[in-house]
Amino acid sequence: MSRTASSLPRALGVAVVVVALQALMVAAFAWPAANLEPRDLPVVVAGPVPAAEAFAARLAGERPGAFEVATAPDAATADRMLRDREAYGAVLLGPDGPAGVHLASAASPTVGQLLTQLAQTAGQGRPVPLQDVVPADPDDPRGAGLSAALLPLILTSLVAGVLLAVAVGGRAARLLGLVAYAALAGLAVTAIVQYWLGALPGDYLANAAVVGLLALAMAATVSGLGTLLGAGGIVLAVLVVLLLGNPLSGLTSAPELLPQPWGAVGQLLPPGAGGTLLRSVAFFDGAGAATPAWVLGAWAAGGLLLAAATAGSRLRLPAGAHAGSAEPGGPAPLRNPA
Image 1 (cartoon, rainbow, N blue to C red):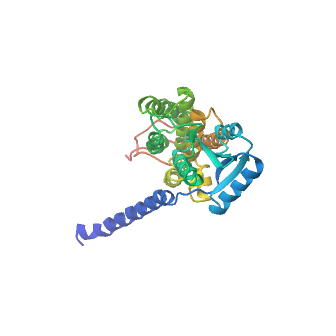
Image 2 (cartoon, rainbow, N blue to C red):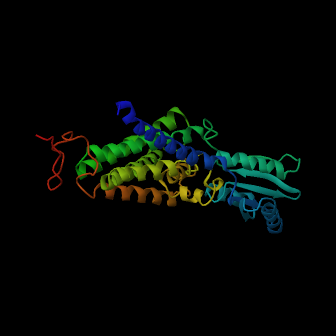
Image 3 (cartoon, rainbow, N blue to C red):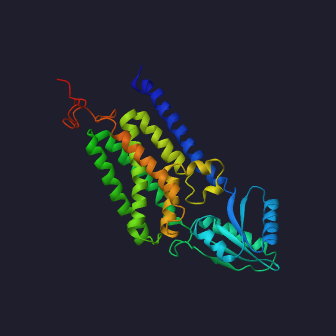
């Protein structure tokens, strides 16, 4: 059998595997984006109780399941709910119906556009004034710069986790590498997004701490699973963080616009929790930050525990590439055969 003939099955196998992976990635990334629509989207109706309840019932009848409507007695209460991240927008009622719409576009520029359209519809031909109570950064009104920074951060965090699992055999050195990577990534990425792109307001160090925690959660997860489970752990981490976490993060839209329950699931994964936490810290003075902070902390702590579970890793560089790196009591470094 010729060399070409013997290599043909392997070449076809590579093509099939790569196309299958390609199809999986296209489906994972495109499906949520192609099915964006409001699903229990929190909004407020502000005005006298009978009128507010009647308008809420009207919204529920016109768009079943689209909005989760709360009522407020006045505009000040509605604005407080927006600043506390309890809702994305508020319809203010006057004697003749909707008299204004207040937004918190910093929570989601996409939802801000949707509620602007809702205001135009609710006015029934009359202009309805709009007020953005918590606006997006004026240098990044659509949130494009902020969302575009997420994918590179995910990819580099995965790479950092894999390299630390493969090349570093000692527990202490591996943990130090993860923490150092997260700290540097937080400072560098935040400096680019906040000062160069102008896509983030707020305190630089607070924002950098959030980005660093997100980077640590992702890098520690892949490093810990890779250290403990080998190549299978790396694949699992990539599936969870990249193929599920990125498209379900809701950073370019909102969790309530994604198909459910996937929008809620995305908030339990590092990219989704990190995006929500960063918006809360940068735009809302920390309102709504507790849950995503706990989620990221749990991922980071779990990953660090797994990364420290064993001195040696089931992943290895070629024999002798890191000879002498094992800690006392750990597995002996691999050696080239005599």
